[in-house]
Image 1 (cartoon, helix red, strand yellow):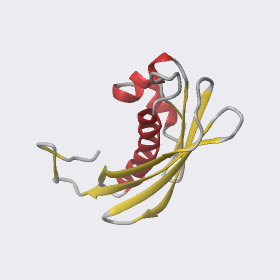
Image 2 (cartoon, one colour):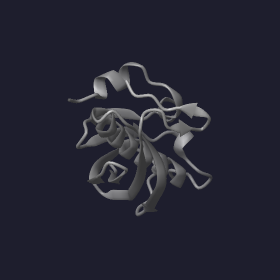
Image 3 (cartoon, one colour):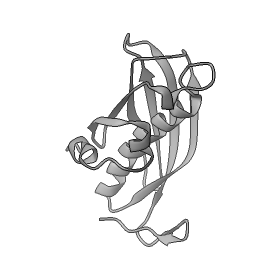
Image 4 (cartoon, helix red, strand yellow):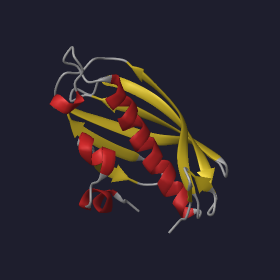
Length: 145
């Protein structure tokens, strides 16, 4: 089931602030994109590496979260390794994330960000911890819906 329509219906938080839009969101693949604008640029006029990290983590976490939810769990990212391959100043960036492994206790997802020409601009891998309902996370109890 593709959850992208529901996700885009009520954008909020960091993803909304960064202008990230979900193109596709399933347990097996997540695609998000954003159009580069002033909020994404660092002092040299190229997209800040943190934006690439955030987009990679957002795509990977969404997929892992959808998979975990199907099993009555939640996830939280514990590691993000993002490499910057090619600088980008303008245009649309599309990030595609797919799972490497999905276990009961952890998941690992990888993502590739591409520019309008289809060139790779960043790659990343995110490791996520699967949380059982009732687990504590940042002072609150994890509940799944």
